[in-house]
Image (cartoon, rainbow, N blue to C red):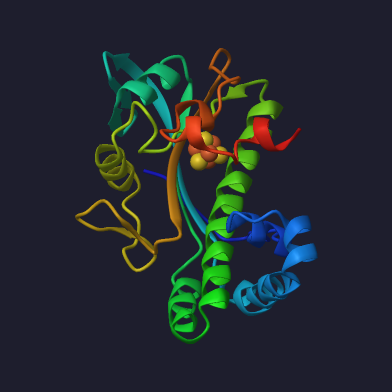
Length: 231
Ligand code: SF4
């Protein structure tokens, strides 16, 4: 099996992104509580050097789909959502992303004496792993486009139609990552915490119009959906 490790990432993260990750609107914060904007800047300065972005990927051909099971060349996935979205995919990319353990260790240490900075560092970690996953998906989409193919949205365990524990175990089973880099706890929690898992399919006729938000359990109460924030 061919598992690829990618670590050549430069993540374009700004202080505004750190503030948004904390649920704050940067323009409002800068006007009303400029000290929080300074904290976000400090989090960037101290936290960025601690990031160790890494993606582990495996590209697998789809062999067959029956009911809720997708047989891949060298493994399988089960779940209503992946079966539905990957049924007409030609190949599937199985992906784990992590930013490493250093930032979250530092954030929890800092939180004890400077909670505001600790929270900003935690937000930086969340923003960084999201940016990393987006970059991996962008690279896959670019490759697909060059081949005249479409890609699905990133399908993660925990979305509606893919039970979290089932999906996590299957992704870890397919990738068998070095536990020193990323591991799955019995509880279903990934370590480092700032990690994410997903699969993405490509093909001529895959659904390329749906989004992760369409299958997110909190979509009816979430104010961060791109369709709501872009207006
Ligand atoms: S609905 Fe909100 S929380 Fe869910 S994926 Fe979309 S932006 Fe993220």
